[in-house]
Image 1 (tube, rainbow, N blue to C red):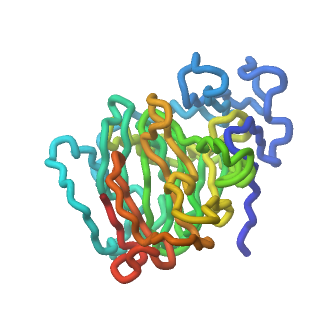
Image 2: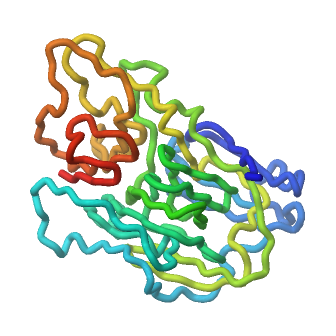
Length: 361
């Protein structure tokens, strides 16, 4: 029987959660008491500078069985295929399209199955993005991964993923997305062979786009974003911790599970979202609106109104306007586009754009 996981709902909210096996494990009135309940260790994970404005400040306090710093030194990890060498290669300005990536035939876990497709900028300067695909067919046994460079937005196209995080457990299936933010440790198990996309952004975090004249409601509503509830495991076993740091992978060994957080609170959390919940806004008269009205999440640059990356979807919807022609209208864009099909047909190029076939302009 499949266990039904519980979630907290909201986006950018202040959450608190504790594993019901340890009631009252969250300290009262202070973050870092000399003695935490159950003899736990207090540990803060910061997603922004300490002095960031309150509205933008992101942090979470963990109350865990053992401190996460307790591990052997990191060494270079040899199995991954993550590359950030796009600055050393000549760019190609042509539109490109390629066939599906094959699922692996030998045991390949989530980290081993990540392959770099393209990118821009530099994680060392904390500005830019990278796009990957992943193909995996085995679980991350006694392993955890974290990204010190930026946030991962994971988009499954085939197969459900079961994620274990320091905050608790969550599942994502095709037509759902998940964001694991910078520094958060997680592990991925599979139910069946899985593949999908990953968008990584450096230096900034994903936010909900401003709605402007749309008003208070529409597009992705905050209440539909789900965050896991606390769940800990107390295991004295060797775990391999894999870190992505300045575009390279490193690993170390620690003698306990990294998922030993009994309770936590804060506003820096992983979250999932069901794309079926997106409330589409569209024209009811003539012409087609700019595709920005289909933005689910955005990662803004320091230039107001200009994104490092926008995550945009084109879901099933009524799209009936007078005296106009949609598929496709032609434009030259100052931003590059990376397009993938999760299911169905791409309305502009049905014959040559099949599921898992990608297009990059």
